[in-house]
Image 1 (cartoon, one colour):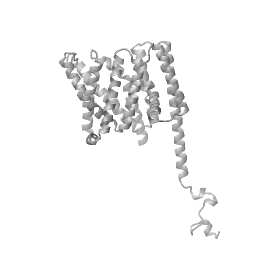
Image 2 (cartoon, one colour):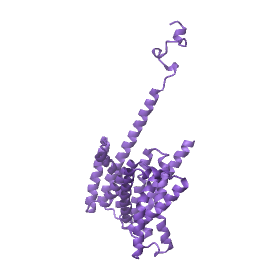
Image 3 (cartoon, one colour):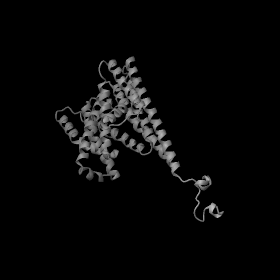
Image 4 (cartoon, one colour):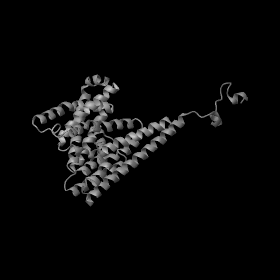
Length: 333
């Protein structure tokens, strides 16, 4: 029963995390007239405040001293911070400038980009179905480039930046809260400096647009941290295969909002491109589930073969024949 409750809590946390990420396009337009860079700077500053309070509440700060003594890991965190800055900033700009659908495409093709980077940078080998999925994804980008009249650079930049972020995070190998704290600490000084400079120029909107607007800018810290906390709770309670399926919720919600709420255009060639992307993701998901099922079956077979059989189930030649406890010895055989 406890395991069932844990898994249910993990699923709810996963739905909450990806649901919030999927609905966040509704939040960024509320911050106008702030520009994308100002919103991004506030997101960095207030995120550090939120995660700092979380660390104090949980008393999890021993890792800071260890991190300071590892220059290589600090360098990787700085790279992760720079890459996620590009991702966050472009995403905010895209939503507030009418490119929600194109932004959602970036997170749809992110798994394909991650696989391609694994092959090119880590020397990973793909299964045939994965090759077909990647090829279908490339065809989708070509179709969308024809449809847009240009490469879908917003989608590609979001996908490659987030895939790079994931690759660096894998090498850093830190917990979600600790990693976010370190990254926002790196970003805090330049972000705060930019906000102070903006205020000195008289262009800051934090105080000039009213108390409600200032509160919304401060809430960017919660908007950033809350889904990450929920994701962390889900990651330790549900299988990775389940998380892999849940990750598609966010771009699906974003895509739906782009069409139904923001009323962005979807001509036939864009539908064709998105259809190819969804086909590639379907192939990837099917292959991942099939591979996971085979791995579980093989593990179960190995576990079964490793367990000794009861005497009643053994063949005669498998029964022990030495020692006074042997049934054959007792009969003089």
